[in-house]
Image 1 (cartoon, rainbow, N blue to C red):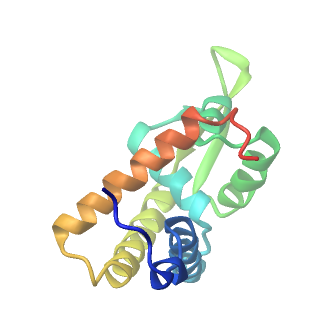
Image 2: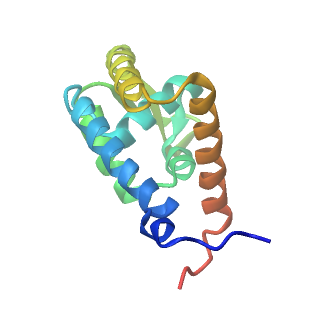
Length: 155
């Protein structure tokens, strides 16, 4: 027989509230540190993806990141202006633009990644390596569940 919740239990924030609060703090800290590198979290993700995969078609990049094409263009323009990426027409298919990370982009990514690691170490300092691994696994499971439920109405 399950124990009945006590009034004190009901005062504790729910998992969703705790996740939202932790997410707000993590976002604030990550945005602050990435601003020092003139990047947003999504731009960091984009540079890391290009670094990992190599040159990627612009449409494929948008699909992979689940970003609307107009939003993707707004993300790419400043990166291209700063010479962190290049966009070129694919010689085999002139309708296709290929996005490539430049050497300057690799350097900016490496510096931003060092800062990201430092901020994550500070955020997750109360957790040991095992707990960090568990948290990451749980967050990945949630993310994958969100993708599976994308057509679901929460009301």
